[in-house]
Length: 606
Image (tube, rainbow, N blue to C red; front, side, top):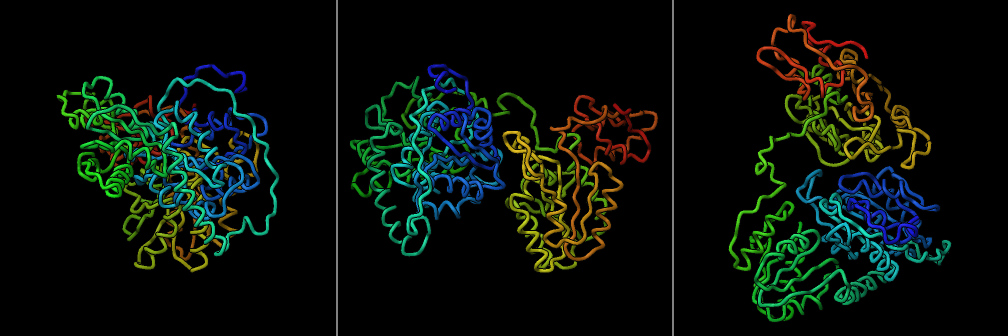
């Protein structure tokens, strides 16, 4: 397929470009766990995959990396996809795999999220790569990402170690015209060979391989100084060093800057020190523009000290660039022009909502979301009780906002179940709910439940089952019954899993049935030990709603505002002294109907 498309230009999202680049490079096994901004890579491979390419959504990032590692030590080219916080989950096997090594090329694509736009934390995979002693490739655009991923595979096979590939949100989700190239020659993969403990990590092997890893890093630094992804252009006494999408912003700014300056682009870890030394030679001052950590800045400061040259290095550490968040074209333009002494002028930043007079859009659960109903039922059942609500990562994290105010803690995937246990140990008189989504339950929630049962905890596990991995785009998981390619798979029952690990009191309830849901929560509150409620209600993005929009009978509405004030549904508002329903956004879930004591809300069945 790719052979026929060679020479064709396609408008591609960055993640699509990365996927097609991996296919061009001969990837055979692709695994991952969905997480914005990385999800579309694996979905594109599933859609475009040639014959013989295996692709899966794994249960979590750790499992995804281990599946890919197995393929890579058998000689296949493997790809793992995740977001930056997913790398935390996969770091245990990845650290060891770098010591054990691989035979086929293995690329771990980690999408960083400066801002952060849709993540718990800002993390820089370049810093992780430096810590883990693993090579990192940092593309600056979708076009470069398309070809650079093949370089990452070559590096992995040349060194016999995994490589990291680090696009950021703006590279992942921007669009560019990409020229499709011919597939690279297919490598002949070898079968797995037992090799006298070659693939078994022991202390003596780890020590020997650590020495090889350090030697490899020095060699790669030299090789990367002549790598095409790293480049040095321009002249003068002032320099700008940048990498990733920030380099693209610097190049945009340079298009109408009169002052000549030396420009260093850094796209790799290890740092290309020989190239950087040429860059520093004869300079007076350097501005470093990068996201997120001052990686390039620290390397240049170190190099100046090692070479004994006096160059003023400015960036995040000096306060010349913001210490956190993503860069924007306007911010980079202002910083570069100011550094070069050129006259500044106003530049409207199209990402700044205030510049466009756009109204603020606070994060909120969708109209018709089953989680709103589940939260409200538990809230009502808990009134008058000392209760703590531990949350987790997913759409339901939005339950922390008013008026629900039902997420008191949120740490990382699967943590809510275990945190609830710690909270209850500290305050045994409190009722502790742990809210967790269906996909997160399979990801890392099960060990927390096992821990609770084993240690005789007193908590209520509330599984919010909306039949999808909703927050990242509706991907399937082990409880759905189909794979990423649409093939049927065994559907795992959350109820059966909970029962199999020893949870004795398990209730299943329709999340939209407010009366039944509230009674289930009340019953659980009166119990002891580990008990569970599975709130079942399909994500509105999948079902689209099953009924017509609700309407308000003005003759019955007394204007109490309870429906608006208690639920926080974006389809409900007050117009004057009466409640109002936005028919365009209402999905007919009828939760508000159950709430209204005056029978003012209703609708006909579709």
